[in-house]
Length: 60
Image 1 (tube, rainbow, N blue to C red):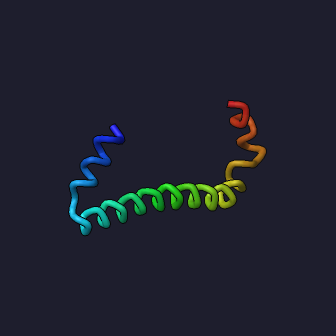
Image 2 (cartoon, rainbow, N blue to C red):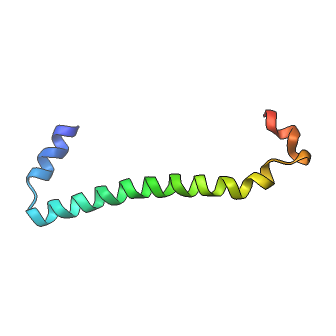
């Protein structure tokens, strides 16, 4: 599979290779953004999640 993808990329013009590179960068950044947003939201939701009324759900 990787060899097939590399062959396709090698057949592209330099401009299109650059576009592929930018797209891969976008995908990598998207993953980091999701992870960062998840981490930031944990602190905000901790007050909602960690309370005595919902303690019964902690063991699920």
